[in-house]
Image (cartoon, rainbow, N blue to C red; front, side):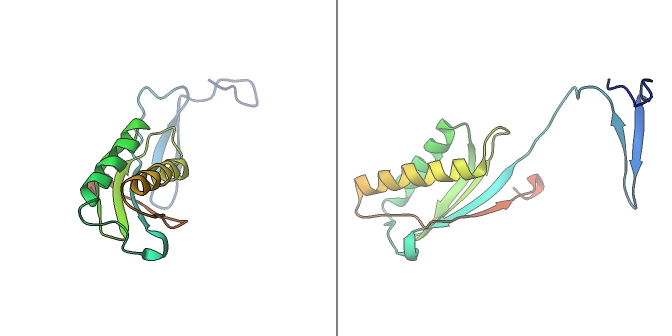
Length: 135
């Protein structure tokens, strides 16, 4: 327990009240933690070219899911079209979204080039947080 400026032990429970909120603050450690980081990720092929043939798509989606799994990311859904991909994933607490997306794009573009032809993803991506109730 952190001491108060006067040296006395702070109260066990205090509260913060606002216009519509009131919740207790407790000193010490939390016995349980819950973090939910669900993201809908979207990225497209460079210049939105139709460079993911239909026959390659299921294998690419599986490959992307395997890359994610190897990095501790749980993929809930994955799919797309000839020019973009959508991924619904659970981001681990200790992971950075940027690093995960970079890893997915880098490894998968290399794989597509080995199995198809010239290929590249766009430079950026879209990432949208998803409420667990909307999964």
